Image (cartoon, rainbow, N blue to C red):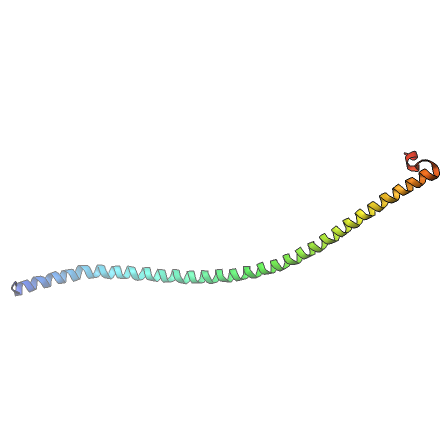
Length: 125
C-alpha cells in the first residue's frame, strides 16, 4: 500500500477543494433550473385541473341540454305520429267518399239513361 504523506494529503485536499469550488456551483445552478421547471410544472398542473373542472362543468351542462332536447324530440315525434295517423284516417275516409261518389255517379247515369234514354251529362258536354 502506498504511503500516506502530508504532501499527498495536501494535494488530494486541493483537488477536493477545486472540485467543490467548480462543481458545486454548477450543481446548484442545475438544482435551481430543476426547481424552476418543477414550479412551472406545478403551475401547468393547476391550469390543467382548472381546465378539467371547466370541461367537466361544460360536459354536465351539455348533457343536461341534450336530455332536454331528447325530451322535446320525443314530444315532437309523438305529435308527428298522431298527425300522421290523422292524415292516414283522412285519406282512407276520402277514398271511401270518392268510391261512394263514383257509385252514385254511375247510378245516376244509369237512371238518366233509363228515364231519358241518354245520360244528361254526356249531352251537355
